[in-house]
Amino acid sequence: MTIRIRILLDFLAVGLFVAGLAYWWQDNLTHEVIGTIFFALLIAHNVFNRRWYGTVKKGRYDPPRTLNTIVIAGMAISMLILLGTSILISQDVFAALALDGAFAVRAAHMFVAYWALVFLAVHLGTRWQMVMNVTRQALGIKGTSPLRTWTLRAATAIVAVKGVLATLEMGLGTKLRFEYALDMWDFNESTLGFFANYLSIIGLYAALTCYGLTFLRERKRRKA
Image 1 (cartoon, rainbow, N blue to C red):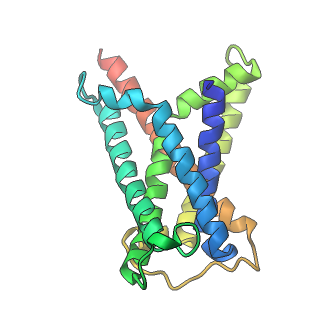
Image 2: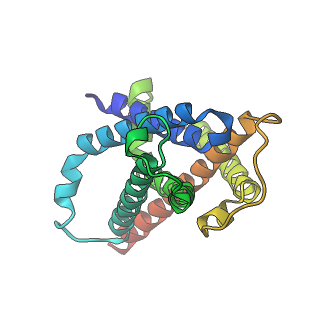
C-alpha cells in the first residue's frame, strides 16, 4: 500500500475519532460502528508501521525521539483502555461481552478518550513534516514559495487561535483532569461548531508539536 493511501486512511481515522466524541449527536449503534471502524484503521496503522517497534531499543535518544516514544506509548495505553472499555460497555456490536451497569467503566471510557485525543494530535504533529512532503509530491509542487509559506503559516496561526478558544469552550482542561463538566454541547444549535472545535484543538496541539520539534532540531544543528 502506498504512503499516500496510508496517510489518507490515517486522516480518516482522525475524522472518525472526532465523530466518536459526538456521542449525543448519534445513536449508540452508530457510535459503536464508528468506533469499530476506527480501531480497525488503528490496527492497520500499527501493522503498516510495525518496523518502528523493532527500533525502540536501538540507537541514541535525543529530545525529539524521546518525545515521539513517550507520545506513542501514551497513545497506545489510552487506546488500549478505550478499546477494552468499549467492549465492556457495548450495547450493540459487542453486547455479548458487555458488563451490566459498569458506571466506572463508562466514566473511564469517556475521560480517557480526551487524553487519547491529545496524544493523537501530538503524534500527528510529530509526523506533520512527512505529511507535507507527501502532499507536495502528490500535487507536483517543487521548490519553495514565500507566498505559499506565509499563507500556510497564517492558516496555522488561525487554527491555533481557534484551538485555544475551543479548548476553553469545550472544557478540555476539566475533562483531562477527569472531572465532569456541567456544560453539554447543543447539537440542535450547531453541529458544525462541535467538529470545528475539536479539529482545531487537534490542529493546535499538532502545530505546537511540529514547531517545537523544528526548534529542537534547528538548535541541535547549530550546536553541531
